[in-house]
Length: 397
Image (tube, rainbow, N blue to C red; front, side, top):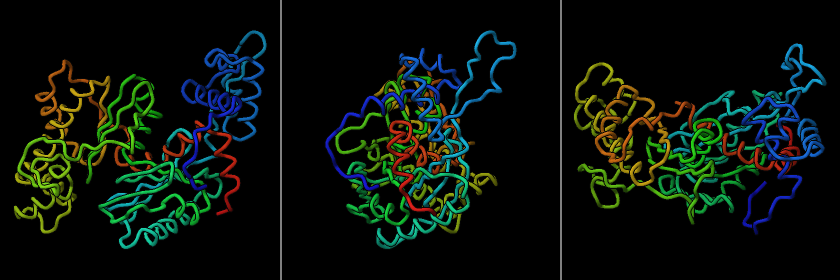
């Protein structure tokens, strides 16, 4: 399924009601039919029809074992997601590493793998990735894969399925069409930071707060803002914090010094470690290993990066004043011994009261694969009837 620009069409009542039933069960389930009606405001006949339709599709099932013992009157059999049939595939294309995975309907990662991001032209690179994904999915013959969530940095045009990624040398690449033709599966493209924020909205902090700021740092940096469970998307895609001025003397490709991304990127820290004689090659994993072994220079480099990240989080927290800030990305989750340095810098930078609003994502090193899968799950939960119909048309793997 290639996504092309089209006029906005309001979904029919049938589709809206099916999505509403699925959403409330996903958030509150297991629920009886009567409880679904109370949560959604739908009539009992409508609830019964939608539940039956979603059960026939394999998205829901009854759980008679959960009926309370000794219940009086007609038993109200709880209904919940059936997480044994369908799965969502996700592909995250990073600057140096491409990760792909498979998750169930609850966002639990069933399996994942990673490869170095292929060099060369975009078409050959995506063909190589598609071949790896096809082989990967053959490990799960009993799962019905509803599609592929493709997440990447750079500039993403989700509606047209186009990807611009300067770091990879990709310009106006029809990524959705190429991956769809190579796999036969529906493909949904999104920016990697919005995809990660969506993972938090569906399966993390999202259901518990009205305002959520998601902050990501690894080789690149990014931020996403969600209000009342809806991700803000500005014109032309997401904003950028790559050039947020956080101080320092690291020179950015833009010509300035102290830009956030140039200061905190893995490669910047690794290059500094090579220059200082700490490691022989610019690999952030070697820098972390040296810090764990007690090398004071490696420890200082990681502590300085954590402090720069903390200053950035403090500035952004003050600008947006969210209920919760969630931190993700291996620059934060991998060197966990540096998190106190980040939090100290955050506390001294923010001018708003309270510093206990910051949390680290629970997805850890599975973040990239989970986020890419979640992009597809979001489509499934919003449009279950359409997406499953498209998935059935896909050729057998």
